[in-house]
Amino acid sequence: MDWGTDLWDQYDNIERHTQWGIDLVEKYVKFVKERTEIEQTYAKQLRNLVKKYSPKRISREDPEMKFSQYQSFLSILKELNDFAGQREVIAENMTMNICADIIKYSQEIKQERKVYLLEGRRAQQNLETSFKHLENSKRKFERDCREAEKAALHADKTDQDINATKADVEKAKQQANLRNHMAEESKNDYASQLQKYNHDQSQFYYTDMPQIFNKMQEMDERRIKRLKQGYSSFAEMERQVMPIIGKCLDGMTKAAESVNEKYDSQLVIDLHKSGFPRPGDVEFEDYSQVINRASSDSSLGTPKPAGDVRSVGKNKGKRWLFSKRYKATVSEDFSHLPPEQRRKKLQQKLDECHKDLQKEFDQRDALHKMKDVYQKNPQMGDPNSLDRGIAENKQNVDRLQTEIQKYEMWLADAEGRLANKGDTIRYSGHLEHSVTLNNNGPHEKESPDTTHSDDSGQEAITQPVYTEFEEEFPEEDEEETVSPIGECIALYPFEGSSEGTMSMTEGEKLDVVEEDKGDGWTRVRRSKGEEGYVPTTYIKITLDRH
Image (cartoon, rainbow, N blue to C red; front, top):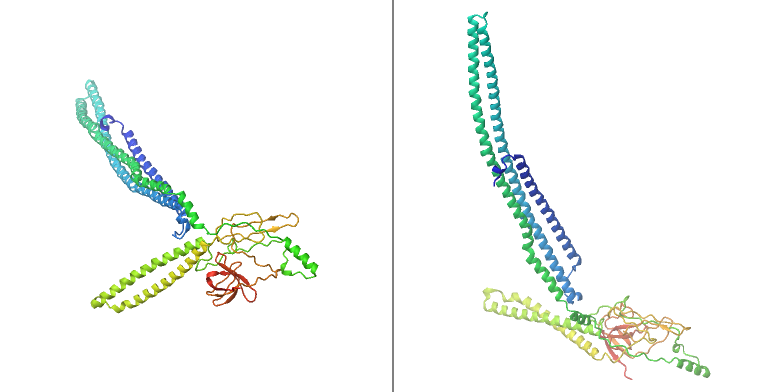
């Protein structure tokens, strides 16, 4: 089975078929290029998606990083980014191993086909030339035969003509003999050209063109084989990255399985547990005593003190330290936090200080050992060059030890308050039954907005579960003044920038109006009458014992 034998007369069809094969190769290359563009676009969109949902900065201090569900989500993003990288690998391999190679091979095939077609045209032109020579010699032989026949007839006619001279007869015979001789030469030339053409035609159809067709067949089969490899590579490129893609998918599955709902629920408790006690029952306030006392005072003719009168229809809202609009100033001892969170934060800082202190101890030992080596072997270094590092190390140790003592004192204070946190539960003085839980955390407590209507006798109250301060600040129209229960001296400066707090300077003397009830704040007053809350750990209190 070969083209040279079976398709000896199908030159045009072979030419069209080989051109169609090359066009198919170029079509496949274009197809692969578009596939690589799709892969690259897909990978780019995946990377943009990962970038969009990835945190800009990853910090271990971020509470979200502690949740297993969020860590799993970040793992899935990482695996998806690796997955996008494998799509880029597929696109790159297809571009290099399929497109580039097949395009190069296609150019070689085009050039080879052009050479074979040129050889076929040249062989065909040679056969056509030989056929032209045959036709010319044939026509000449035919013409010479007619001329010889005419000359012979003319010679016979002249010989029979009684009026013709002998010379005319001889001339006619000579002319006839010449024409016969020329016809014989034309015959021989025609026979020679016919033999040559038959040889050329046999060479063309049985040797030259079959060889060219067989070469083109071999070329086309090589093209098909190379295209077959391209088809196989198209799938192989995908198969090569499947193990890595499988690992990415396994990583996503593993990340999903690592989500622990119980752990996350406990973590919510650890992050947001305040340590405050639940509120107790609201005490009954007997306003009838005011009426009885007013009647008694009226009967005695005694004027009624303005400070003892409270408006029944007026219910003031408590000013909260931790609210959405007002946030407590962040203090070094974390007294702005709820008790439980404060204890955890202090314990964390204490652990960090112990860890840093251990590092300083290790560095101190290393410096002393190095100094001993230098003293024993001066050629290795100057011992005095380490004095500066030793001095800095000592300063760091002293600083860390001081901080540890400070945090231990604050931690003991926080743990002591947690142990006694159930002693006092403070509520607003005019609360009714409506209570709304606040789930905004210790830093975002709503200030209750209480209203009272004389006509209906009902109150609409929004009240957190626990409160920060027991007493309300007097409004501008109130003149009631609470007697101080002691004095205090400010140990540290404090900027009271939040609602209900008061600033103070170091060494300032203040009157204590209300003791700390377990929330870390003490109510104080200046001699000019300004009142507010300050951190208990920032002052030294001396109570009056009467």
